[in-house]
Amino acid sequence: MVLLRELLGETLRRRRRAQKRTLRDVSKQANVSLGYLSEIERGHKEPSSELLASVCGALQVRLSEVLAEVSREVASHERGEAASSGRDAQSRQVAMLLPREKDLAEESQRRRRHTSPSSPASIAQVRSRHRRGEVTDSVVRAAA
Image (cartoon, helix red, strand yellow):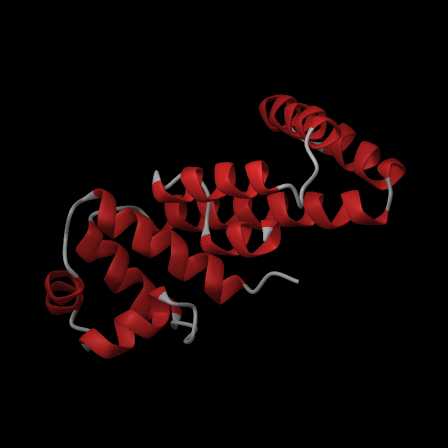
């Protein structure tokens, strides 16, 4: 099961790192303590909507963009859970996705068929994608 606070923290951290900014810099600008912002990014604390808006303002990103990104991650995890409960459930989910997401989901299904999720090569690939900021910490944990 995926926790929303973890995905939200990973998304905020990825956005901050993409801007090459420090926790200290963002925490000052958002008027949030450094330790609390760190706990949010690590998924240990769930921020209030007011605090989240302040952090997004400091990062100069729209709150709606961050929430949309988190929503896509949640959907991705849900699709992954459906795969473990059977292909029929996953097929039904793919049919309900938007065209672009449907293409991504179908590609993901093809990859799963050709690669064992527990093989060392696929875990190494996931870790490599994580270092490039393409996947979240929870995806790496799921692959391991």
